[in-house]
Image (cartoon, rainbow, N blue to C red; front, side, top):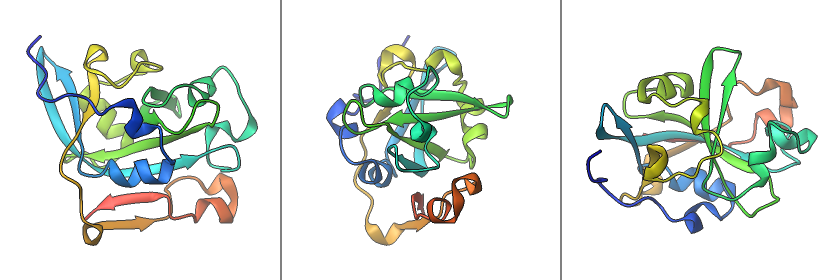
Length: 175
């Protein structure tokens, strides 16, 4: 394995309000190990899932074996299989016992969360691991993105949460 190209973001970056983390992940570098070499992509789309009141958040209905990771330490990966087909990856945010995470929806040229995880080779084996080089997937710092390059919209694919929660502007895009 080659030397890492940059240090990972500290846990303190993720131990903040979910919407702040979702916005500030834009422009950061998703770094992953592929064929023994470190690769990187610029994160360009995220979605926030913010706590037990958020009906689109998997932890809305409580703590389960599947959602336990959302209640855990910030900076850990929450990776799950969607529709039995696509792995989707999130990073846990906020304090322990407050279930929240940010979905990585896009990075580089990969414009969908399933396409992204497939391209970088992320699967359920990364679930619950910290976002550090030791697991082969982590996020590194990059210069901040100015507000005029960021667009906020409603999240995608969460109609089941009802109109109030599905229309929240919790999706962030780099333009």
